[in-house]
Amino acid sequence: MPLGPFNLILYPFIAGRTGMDLGLSAAQWTELGAILKKLHAIELSPELQTMVQRESFERPYWVDEIQRLQARVDAGQAEQDFERDLISFWRERNEQMNQLMARTLALGRMLHEDPRPFVLCHSDIHTANVIVDPNGALHIVDWDQPIQAPKERDLMFFGANLGSLTGSDDDARHFYEGYGATEVDHVAFAYYRYAWVMQDWVAFGAEVLLHEGLGEITRHSSLRQFKQMFDAGDVVEVAYRSDAVFSA
Image 1 (cartoon, rainbow, N blue to C red):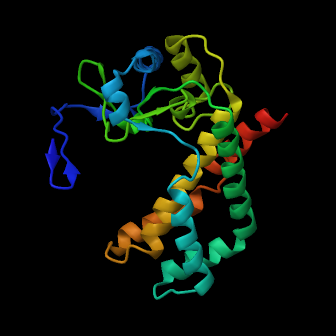
Image 2: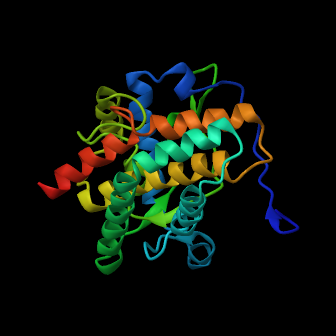
Image 3: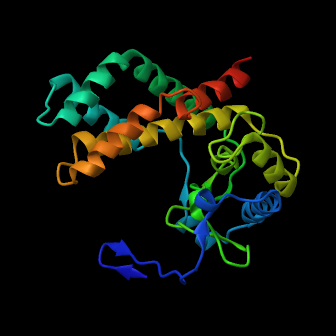
């Protein structure tokens, strides 16, 4: 429902806990896979196709945001300890971060020049957005950014023998039992895992360096999460692993 310059979405209240907090059983992982397969099989009407965002790969929003953050880092503008901490961390990894961005953009150009089939994607289908009610039923929430994109936009959360962003490799195996046999496009898979790094990079970096109205607890938390991206087994390593399979 339009509300000034915004759109208002009203959801029913669902009593339950997130799959991330509660954990999903093998059967629930399989059910989640089946749910996502049904979503990807939906054929949008011509009218809805004009309303739902369509992936372009040309110039993602995060390019300009990263440049803003880079300018702040280069200028060394910092008043708080956590700002200085992030600037120091960023500078130490500046070459690696530039390479990450360049590789993401290169993969995006491949997908732009050689388009893959598009399906309707949720775009943020990790287990924090899966509510498990008291009867064990699954409810998918956070539908504010559906997108028409290659199926890997959603599948990148689930391993396909490439490491998982949500759950374990065994969980991913159960997920694909429900989703069904599918050929994963490794270019798209690697792109979206790199793009997830870019998205988190912008979100956490901006909260530390640009959003001065946020409380210190939030900004300290964002600093911790920014650094955590580069930890062993976290999103940067998972992106590299996916890319290594494509490049092999």
